[in-house]
Amino acid sequence: MNAKKRQLTVAVTGLNAIDSPGPGVAVIRGIRDCADWDVRIIGLSYESLEPGIYMEGVCDKVYQIPYPAAGTEAIFNRIEYIHEKESIDVLIPNFDAELYNFIKLSPKLEEIGIHTFLPTTAQFEARDKINLFEFGKKHGFYVPKQVVIYSVSELPKVAEELGYPLVVKGKFYDAIIAQTLEQAQKAFHKLSAKWGTPIIVQEFINGTEINVAALGDGKGGTISAVPMRKMYITDKGKAWAGITLEDDRFLEMARKFCKATKWRGGYELEIMLSIDGKPYIMEVNPRFPAWIYLTVGAGQNQPAALVKMAMGHDVKPYDKYAIGKLFIRYSWDLITDIEDFQKISAFGEY
Image 1: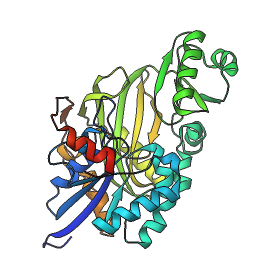
Image 2 (image 1 turned 120 degrees about the vertical axis):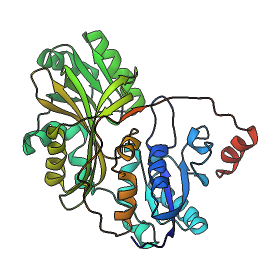
Image 3 (image 1 turned 45 degrees about the horizontal axis):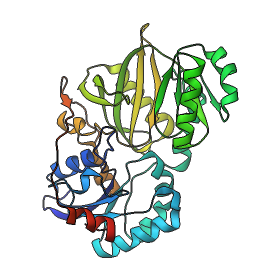
Image 4 (image 1 turned 60 degrees about the horizontal axis):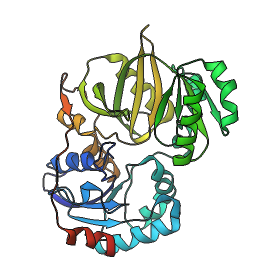
């Protein structure tokens, strides 16, 4: 980019910095750390109690937007209204459930001057949990056996096929390890009530959890890839601490994934390194993970690189990162005023 700083307005979703955090706050931190621009951050929230709304130094302005279920027209109308007031340059969605709408809307957003850097619908669907096993077979990745079911009555047969323990997964989020049929049935009801059907029932792989945050250029190239081993995991399976690793196997998996899919944008590989040394892809999350700020700390600022590519700039692939960089997530009590909460609740702006 030019040496002279330019003004840039970036809109970001995923401000729920809770025990199962969205990536939004970490993405914003990465963008703010980049010295190539003077940035204004527009937060896009779904609920009034998302902590990122109120955190000092995170967002310059926050607007509520409709839930994904409202459909593309309602979402576009709201984004267009915000754009008229804020002149958004780049929009970065950070939730799986909202991505389909934003991918579909990206041509219309481009027409009004809002840039995105998102995968295509075909790319998005190919790595979906429902299609992951077939994707792995096609491209030569280790992927656990899985069966997609729509009814709890299908569980006994599937459990007999996969054996216990097994993993019951919601179609968007959440995974529950079941040791018995009763536990699997309970997990099915819980996840289907929360996310709907289908439910994915997956072979359990015992081993070490590794995650790779990566950024694809949309042409088959990998701009950045940083592997991390989880050191502390919450009861929801989220990494609360992790450390960057030196292991070319995981970097090669990221490169192979980008080459196979021509992935455009950020993504995360969730890998289980089995006891016998096989790296199984458990999930491919189609956006930055919540721990994405570790890539910034390790020397590869993936959020900033994505913004540059969205704006049409050439970005050279990173060739190194710091090994042994550790992140530790923490929580503290943020104090704000009821008037601030009322502004976002009543008027949808803060």
